[in-house]
Amino acid sequence: MGAVIPLLTIWLVLLSAPALSFGADGHRIIAIIAENHIRAKTAAAIQEITDGKSLATLSLWPDRIRHLPAWRQSKYWHYISIDDHEKFDDFPRNPDGDVLSSLEYFFAQLKSAELTRQQRLEALAFFVHFVGDIHQPLHVGRRDDRGGNKINLKWLKLSKTTNLHRVWDSLIIDSETLSPEEYSQTLDTASPVLIKQWQSSGFLDWARESKNLRDHVYNFGAGAKRTPIQISPAYIDRNKPIIEQRLLMAGVRLGDYLNRIFDPVSRKQ
Ligand SMILES: [Zn+2]
Image (tube, rainbow, N blue to C red; front, side, top):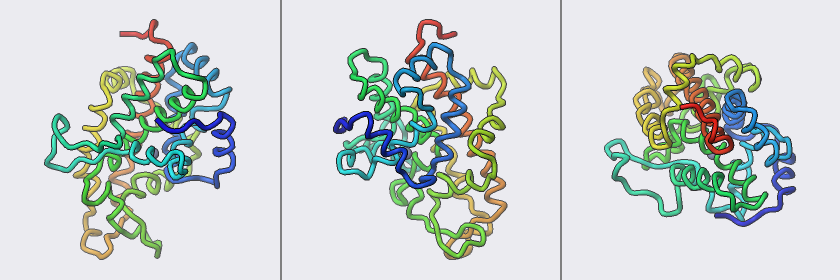
């Protein structure tokens, strides 16, 4: 899957990228929460693969390379399309791949002993990134509006129009003034019981949960009467806690899956 790019190139791409890329803080927050939930052996294995770089840094790479010719096919791996009436046990999948098949593929790759150092680094970056993406409700989106990308709207009082996908990828998260480090520590307060419940689930469950949030995502209240649709402070107030819970769930689940990969023997049942 994908051409091999030298290890160094990964870090050059990351270092040369302009300021904050699209949805970057969401991925950073999830990675930092995951690091709070991994065991020492897992952390050591990850350090070895990333040469000491943080998971937060690594998690941004798949968004930065998806437009490069060598990685063109990876653009399909970040999301899955499923219409409201379709069921997860039987619906047409994109033959070029989707976020569900990619999570399965990279999870299996990371558990395999056969990878080169370069492949392992890439697989880890993709896996960390896609656990985040599948928790963003609009990465499990309707076909006709391309996961909200085709829903144009106005964000608060800004004159420029944006789209619904961006609102859920980054605008609501970026409306919070905390740094990703501070934000993740503020969010990471779930009880052990809840964490255990969240971790007793798999990729398909996460996709189902994202799809089930559509009633919230598409409820614009009075803003729906405007053309383009207006995102109001009330919409943000209603949905910010939902996004924050998705970030937290993604983070604690990512931590658990990284433990399953890198420290499976001591996994607590
Ligand atoms: Zn993505």
